[in-house]
Length: 277
Image (cartoon, rainbow, N blue to C red; front, side, top):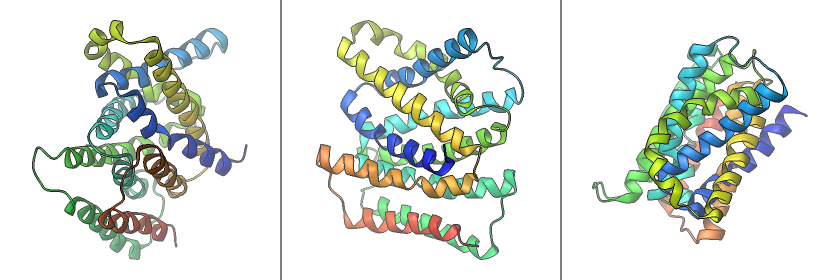
């Protein structure tokens, strides 16, 4: 399949993550466990018993570092939706392509014109404007949620680069296996006490969430990443902002403020202008 079409389909599916998280309404540590453990178990069984593939072939240290960072990133990502709206969270999360472009220049040696250095001030200004709508107190849940998502975005951009570095030797779904590998083990002790008290409906929802977002969408995403620049994929990913925001507005009645729209425009504009040579 055309990598651009594959990326778009993956991004549209990823846009439903916030709606899943809001609907399931589990503690972040428990939901993070399921989200990472289920794809790991399914892919391990598939590659080991059906495909007879040797998973640990090369760049293992990089893959494990990426997996560790992704565990922290995903916990922050899910926790963010527990505190703030889908619209707020997804706009903040999409500062990640700017960080990805910077990391791409450092580690992948993808060129960035000198004039684009000034564009780094646009997403910074966008973040400041969005956060300016919130009172800076530890009791402000929106502020906590958006702060968690900003950290998630910074970490996520780095994991994209790490997995881009290793994508030459692994398929997209093999990368998904490593992406989730450590998270299930890390969060199992914290989620263990809740496992016996969940309803069958909740188990069904978390399974669909983990397989749809954690396995299918990210498998397609990393398959596309193997055949295109990380910076190009970052640009296409802004479709997720639209999809996720529509879920928040239509399904959960979330409000959109002037500050949010202004900040979102600056963040998105920065990445669009970054693509121009």
